[in-house]
Amino acid sequence: MTRTSTQVAVVGGGPAGLMASHLLHRAGIETVVLDHREVREIETTHRAGILERDSVRLLTETGVYSPGAERVLTHGDRHGGIDLRFGGRSHRVDFERLVGASVWLYPQTEVFSDLHRARTRDGGDLRYGVRDVQVHDVLGTPRVTFTGADGSPHEVTAELVVGADGSRSACRDLVEPRTRSSREYPFAWFGILCEAPKSAPELVYTRSDRGFALISQRTESVQRMYFQCDPGEDPGAWSDARIWDELQTRLAGEDGFSLVEGPVIDRSVLPFRSFVQTPVRHGNLLLAGDAAHTVPPTGAKGLNLALADVRVLAEVVERALGKKDPDLLDEYADRALARVWKAQHFSYWMTTMLHRSASDTDFDEARQLGELNSLVSSEAGSTYLAEGYTGWPAR
Ligand code: PHB
Image 1: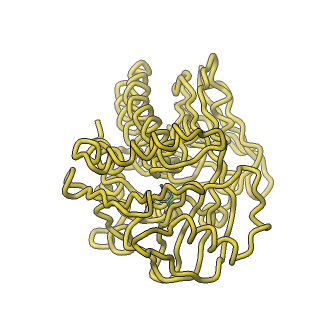
Image 2: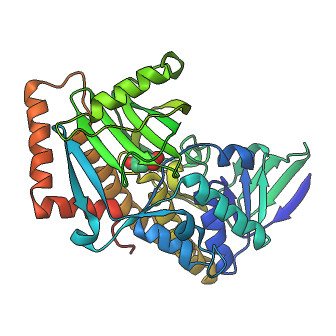
Image 3: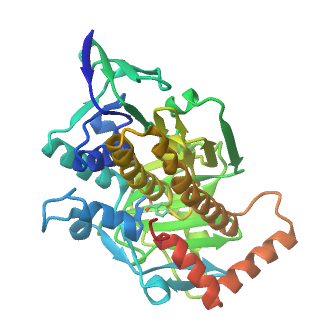
């Protein structure tokens, strides 16, 4: 058994775990990051692609990049608004005019790669491809045992453990007693990557009689699109022609809008739910990101919320370790959860405003259109959307 000790063991080496490790390193706090996945697997798992204003700031203002080489700014795309499309017409919500903020289209896989590069550059202790990760004694001196990528047994002793191990978190099962609140949705997203030029300069969130669709982008020649489907849908049963037909039908309208088609190079069905587990602190274990909460993807809050969590977490951990006062850790829950529930509401609201449900009545359908109409015709309504989408100020 190889034994090491560190100040903070971070379970989960996705963007949340790596950002936690990066921020703690900046505060002079040592970490070891563990993940059962290989780097390659994380780099190739497609996730959402929108960064809030403060997520971009966190990347550019905390030394993730060398000065002048801020990849999110050079390779990302700044979007000053989105289109809400319904009744066959698009309505632009102009974030810059409404709230003086924009978002950046920059895929989560890129955020991961940038953080991984930064932690490697700074000599971070990162262990990917490890197995049998187990966290012990979080109410005393925590230990994490695991089997290294080479098959040898290891133990890391730490003052604190950060559980950033994603939506299938094992860390969250260690919290006792715990409360889980969740909401399931009777639909999923069918997501594709296709080789085609952009069909629109910004994201188009669409409500149609056949259900929701979202037009997003990746590069000049690769695009990301989604449409609402049944959670049991088999992606293999859809030919390219059928996918395009479905997307074109949902986007069609009196303005003649149509998508530029191309070969579909990736397709998958993405189920989702709303979920929060509390408390997010149990002794010397702190949960962050998807381990503690997940949101539906409408509005792209997941990664942003995880980054907001770890920003607060790093600040609180620095103070608690510095003052040797674990009671200070409670501040993390109070500050993080306030934002979590705002984002839960926002994601739920955008989801229910744009998706159709088999149980919808004529009343539900007309009410939904009434809601969308009142949103785009009201300065207050549009501002509410713009504020939530670009992200509430950090506190
Ligand atoms: C994406 O580009 O993958 C994306 C963008 C916005 C969302 C969800 C996903 O709300």
